[in-house]
Length: 124
Image (cartoon, rainbow, N blue to C red):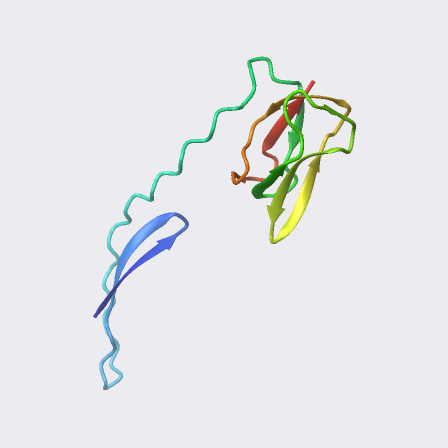
């Protein structure tokens, strides 16, 4: 018998695997142990801007990881300027300003995992 710990979709299972009998007879499977609580993710960082963040959202087009911050709070941007670079599937993808404005907040940090549609920054 061998013991394994397996994680499936964030649920952790302890599994015991028995080697089959030499005669080829089926071995009754044991029910897996009740799932353990998955480790808690670190709480999301609070937005790095003062109250009154901008009204124009800069949103991620794909899920990935924040690779680089191209702009900082207070920088002027033109429509199409890269604000944040995300990495997804070994590609660097610029997330651009949807309109002209000034960066009011940067709501992520380098290394943060983000989902598609997540608000990465806001503009005024």
